[in-house]
Image (tube, rainbow, N blue to C red; front, side, top):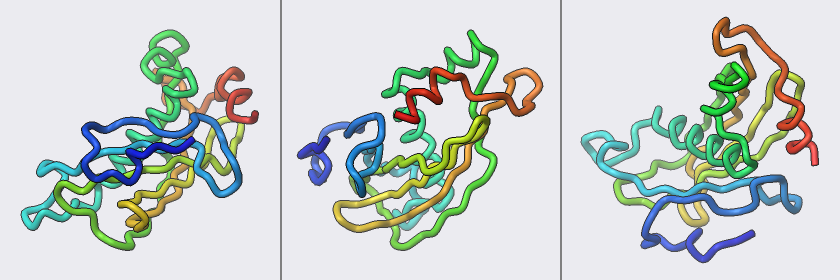
Length: 158
């Protein structure tokens, strides 16, 4: 799915764009858009490097929400939650104050207890950052690995 807001730097608000599950080859499974504010930058107006992880986290959360899985509901009702277990990021070009960004989510490995997700941060047609994030499902009380609920795995494997 596409949206004219994807390339519109004046789009009014952050939001999710694209299908929540995998799409055509070469297309991300999900995209989330956001604006860069002062709080995201250093004194020079350049996005602080660690904030890219926050942007990716927001996109993954909205991706799961788009699939019908609320993480707080999963924690409260099933005693399970997702945690990040590994990250690898590559910074290619900086984002700056007031930029309109698109963060993609593309699951690449679906296991019984973890998911590997490739993510990219774009400004228009310029790739700014790319990363590979592994999230694991854990018991919320003990933080020990736990199987990803079957309903989520079934949805992801379609």
